[in-house]
Length: 142
Image (cartoon, rainbow, N blue to C red; front, side):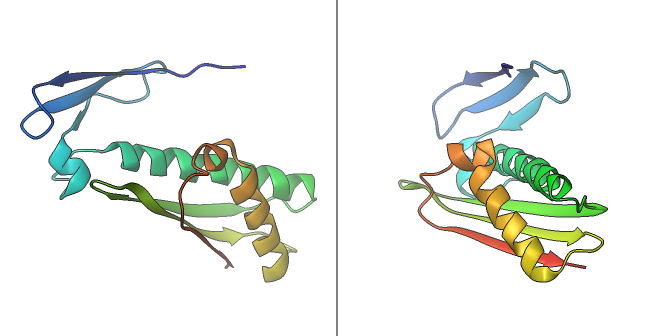
């Protein structure tokens, strides 16, 4: 079992304040600025919780898909994954999507789509985001 940590400092109110994701346990990135407008309107070079969720989801999904393909004897040569998380102020996260393009020697489109569907359902971040009402998956071989 592993724990992952991140720390944020927030100064001011929601609308007029700002925050900094100033530490992550791994030291892999930071500091990252975050504001309410960067979450609800234009990013203007700042991140948002939803952007970080999308990054986590894309990487988790890619790992799950690579694992499933490898276990089935068809390891991928390359996977390009984009995840999108849509936030609506006053409502929350209303939509999510995963788009993956893969190069998998010896696998047909139907097989790739089936493995992608299993990865979408099985990756831990997908499970954590199970409350999103509308989730789409597009999987395509090159």
